[in-house]
Length: 68
Figure 1 (spheres, helix red, strand yellow):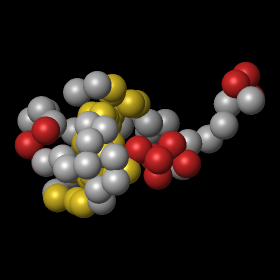
Figure 2 (cartoon, rainbow, N blue to C red):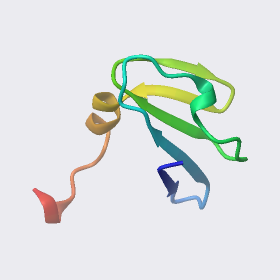
Figure 3 (cartoon, rainbow, N blue to C red):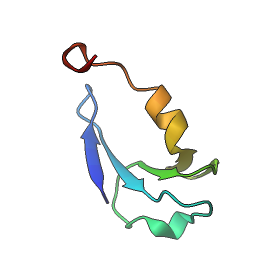
């Protein structure tokens, strides 16, 4: 797991970065939390795991006032 993110409701999410064209659900550790795999261009879901292209993930992030 590359990152663990804590949401405002105190729920944790694991983020794994696999910047390659083809990724697998087995690319993440089996820990008990929702997981997000960032890929190069692949979309898929299975249970509590989602595979999303990195560019989509980055587009959905809010801008920081300090880093504009």
